[in-house]
Image 1: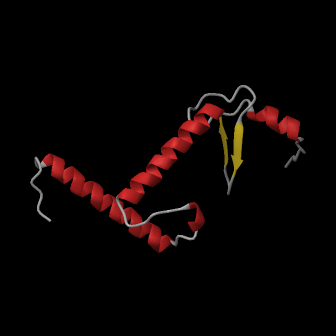
Image 2 (image 1 turned 90 degrees about the vertical axis):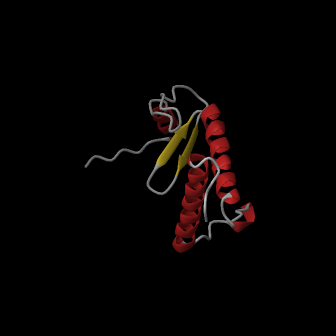
Image 3 (image 1 turned 90 degrees about the horizontal axis):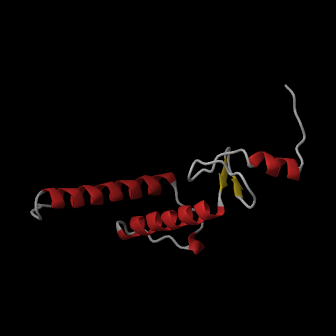
Length: 110
């Protein structure tokens, strides 16, 4: 196995050849945004970052209006796997009721 030390400048230049997580195009130029997480690196163009954040916030809002859970910045990341699964099930049930309503011309029994 060959290991190579990469300087900050070399690392940044190597990202220019990577694809943007959001749009799939090459990063290509500075500036860009890189997030390094648990086992993954996400590279984004600045405009793509903005679009992704807006979509993520929309998804959070959608979950909140279809469930009793209201995440805030103060809540942190303390949700358990059991709580997450319960929220997913609530969202699925809500979407199924909505779909049934529209498919039945507004006549849905509980």
